[in-house]
Image (cartoon, rainbow, N blue to C red):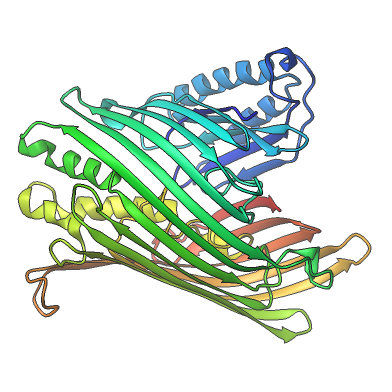
Length: 481
């Protein structure tokens, strides 16, 4: 049984520290039994000293029972709020092995932009039925409530709701049907509210090849993935006609567009963590606006290729291109229509939001250890109308122990991301431009990784080429299949 306690809304763009430990079967009778401690995962992007937060989370990791973990977590929340640096906190209980029924606990401290409120999240789940209840306070004194009930009718229950859990990142259901009923309610300033009732239907099929014993780490190579999902929602908005609430009305509307999504993927890399040869091709598209609201098509194409040049050296290229096209008015960014109606919202404010979304959606370390952290994911809105990404990397893989299957991987990479925004006067022509703007981000860095069987430990140092301070960012990651 899976239970998750979530103490904030979503990951911070610049800092995250996580500790993981397995616990016994999560039952009321089992709360006082000892807890075995798993390796600690740390992800640090902050310019502040992460040692204070790391030490505080280490105290939680040293606790022996689940009751002590919960009690120490409450103290940590108060501590983060008192130092006025962190106001977010996550404590998750996630079931990893369905057969042995062994869940794990995840503790995270999140740095936010002075957003307040503690977010409890309770989710009870098994391979066939899941129930989720989520309620939290948002920034600007908003309140969000979500209730979902779903059934996973998959033949092989490796995942729930086709998400990517932390510990099973590269696993998918072989064939499956997922049905969920969702009801959401959002209030803002006690002035308006939105209510949503929807149904989410998703079907996936994937063909997996047998294990290639000759390949590194015995990684299972997927031949292809089909994923088709249908998301239908009805919305109710109670928002004042006052112009100052216009941006909130449109933002709320964009979150609840009914859509059909389809994706296809071919993955023939020799390793999902540290590929040195092979390729990955994928295409994803989304038709949104089946219900009320503006209609648009969102699409993405992505390609990875890695070439081995001998003696452990390899060269890799990653490219991705995404585009959103409005069907209602023919413009490339329907969301910019609000700027025509509301003059006091400047583009410069929008760019600041986009920069934050970019920081959250892409990170400089993804080329080093695990690739493709977030690109075109339904749970993350990149914010751009069109975007491109290009990564070039030079790698070397050196075996240090054949008996223990230990290898050292070194990656030198260059990464650039570009977001473009355009709003056209006439939807039938691309010649007359009213607003055209873009934002780009480039970085380079070096990553050192230790590969052991199906696990990889990596440390990345990255430099933002457009940051005048030229201060490096550090990324320490532990990932495994």
